[in-house]
Amino acid sequence: MRRRLLGALGGLAAAPLLGTGLAGCAAPQASIAGTGDLGVVVERARGTLALVDTSRRQVLGEVGGLGDLSHASVVFSRDGASAFVFGRDGGLSRVSLTRGRLEQRVMQAGNAIGGAISADGTLVAAQNYVPGGVRVFDARTLELVADIPAEFAPGRLSRVVGLVDLPGRRFAFSLFDAGEIWIADLAEPARPQITRLRDIGRQPYDALVTPDGRHYLAGLFGEDGLALVDLWDETPVARRILAGYGRGQAPLPVYKMPHLRGWAVAGRLAFLPAIGRHELLVVDTATWQEVDRIAVAGQPVFAIARPDGRQVWVNFAVPDYDRVQVIDVPSRRVAATLTPGRAVLHMEFTPRGESVWISARDDDRVAVLDTMTLRTQAELTLPAPSGIFFTSRAARLGF
Image 1 (cartoon, helix red, strand yellow):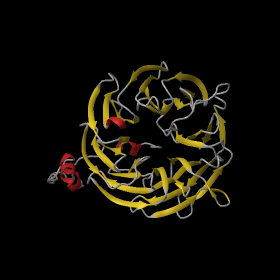
Image 2: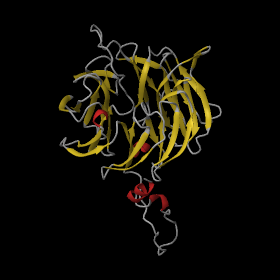
Image 3: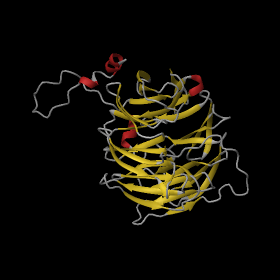
Image 4: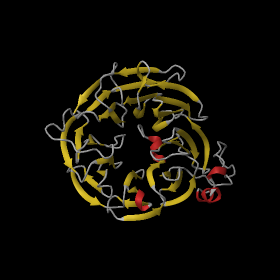
C-alpha cells in the first residue's frame, strides 16, 4: 500500500525542500507535490482511513489500526501533511498523509467524540464523554500538556461537546450535563485559564464558531433555542436566541442528533437544523434574529454551505437517510432533491466548491457530484464510509 501511495503522490515523502541558493543552482532531483488535493474518508466498520485525491477523484491507499471510528472526526496539521483522528474509543491518532501510515496513537480517554487543533497548529484538543473533559496534546509528539476536567459540581463531570478552536491558543466547548460553556486559554498550556459561562440553557449538544472567530453558537437539545457568545466582548456572556422557535407545536421524536460546526454559515446567513422538526432556521448573523424557515424533507442532520455560500446542502436522519436536498441561498428554497445512496452520513465540498463528496454507508460508496449540474462525476467503492475530511480544513477556523 505504501508503494502505491508514494507513487500516486509523486514522491512527496522523499522530495527535498526547495533551497534558498542563488539563481543557477541545480534543480531538485525529485519533484515536490503538495497536500492540497488530499483528504480522508472514514471506513467506520474497519477502523480504517481511506486516503483520497480530490482532483483525481481516486483512492490512494488505506491506513488501518485506528480503533473504533463509529463517531470519528479528523483535523489537519497546518501544512496539511498530518491528519489527527479522534476515535469513539478515546484513541487519538496521527496519520501521515504523505507517507500513508499511522505515526502515533495514544488512548487518551474512555469515550471521545471529536476534537480541534489550535490556530497556530501546536496543540490538539480532544473532547471526551468519559471521563468528561478536555485533554490537550502537543501536536508534534502527542504528549499530554493539559487536562481540563469538566467538573461542574463536586465529583460530577459533564460530557463535553461543541469543541472549537478560536483565534490564539484558545478553545471553546460546551458541557452537555451542566448547561455551561467554557472558554479555555492555553497561552501557557501548563496553566490553562478557564472562563465559565453558566446557565446557558439545557443540554447544549453541539456548537459552531463563525468564520471570523467572533461568535460561538451552541444548539440546545433540552429546550427550543440556542446560546450565543460574542467572543469579542471584554467579558463574554451567553445569551439566548431563537427561544421558543417550536412554540405551540409538539416536537417529533429525534432519531439522530443534528450537527452544527462551522459549515452552516453562508455569507451573512446561518442555516441551522431545528430540533425535532423538518425545518431549517435561517438566521441573520448581523442581528441573530430569525429571518426565515425552510421546510425540508426530514429531520436535518448536517446543513453545509458551499464555500462560496451560494448553496446549502442538507442530509437527514432516518427514515430519510437516502435523501440530500440542495438549498438555493438567494431564494431560500429547495432547488433539488437527490437520492445519492442509502444512509447518507456526511458531505464534504472540494476547496472551491465545484464538487461535493457524499458518503452512502449502506451502499459502500462515496459519490462525487458536480455542484452546478448535480451530475455524478465519480463513484468510489469503500466499505461503510462515513466522515469525509479534506486538507483544505487546515486553513479554516472551526474546522
